[in-house]
Image (cartoon, rainbow, N blue to C red; front, side, top):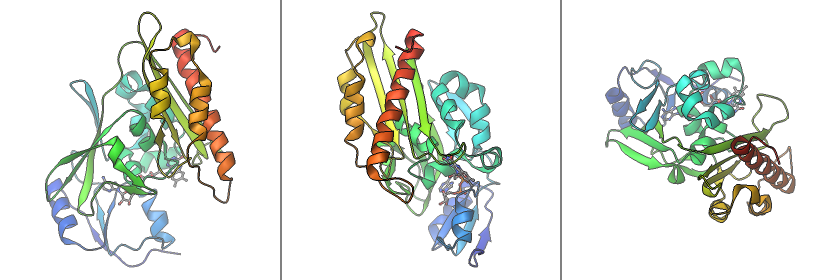
Length: 290
Ligand SMILES: Cc1cc2nc3c(=O)[nH]c(=O)nc-3n(C[C@H](O)[C@H](O)[C@H](O)COP(=O)(O)OP(=O)(O)OC[C@H]3O[C@@H](n4cnc5c(N)ncnc54)[C@H](O)[C@@H]3O)c2cc1C
């Protein structure tokens, strides 16, 4: 099948883009096209207007802005994966990017596109949830910033209004003594995961956990933070890390079922993934896997 008829627009500035989004009905932004074009070709989506943002200067690139890393929405996934800034300051993001699609899809697919599309099993928005990212959105009504906790509105639904576009994602890296782990299970490398998880733990000089972030994706419609388990870990000594607190919290998520797996299996997988991610984070800190 091929897409329904649409009118193609190619704005050359953010201002022009904002004007088009404000004035056109049933319009879609085209970034890397790796999700949008298949959906249009399958006629799951039939926008009347396609607004290609590939020629707008300033929407791509990774830079440090004080203690924050800013990733432009149009930054290709391959550039995030290969960035020295990301490798140094956000290594857990790099670990996750290694599981995203294939060379071809990463070369076109954008970081921002994945964060707008919001597949439940997508690694990039999930890592934004883990790292408490901020999403800077723009439009004819001006710029606003959305916190990661508010960005996810449900299956394939972000906090973007129809007349807005995502400009950049801002992430404050963790500093000091911390460890991280990323794990996912997909049937073939490059497929969307059935479930995945990431964990981060920071400790002080006495090996007390001072901060914890635990996130599971692919299990519920949006990536989930295990806030109660995070709070329970803070204050405990790293050698006494109680994995059961985390796995039982993971089992409390409302897992989805689909044609591939049952809800119970997905829930079980989520708990196994977060356990492995947590132990990896601990291993980073101690150099030992036990
Ligand atoms: C074979 C294959 C395997 C894949 N495997 C994975 C995988 O393992 N993990 C994974 O996470 N993804 C995977 N993907 C999806 C891929 O990561 C997509 O690139 C991503 O979901 C969307 O990014 P895009 O730049 O291609 O966006 P597009 O497809 O162009 O757009 C996606 C949606 O976001 C909107 N949008 C895009 N950018 C903006 C913006 N700046 N402002 C407002 N709205 C915007 C569009 O209007 C559209 O609704 C795979 C894709 C393919 C084809």
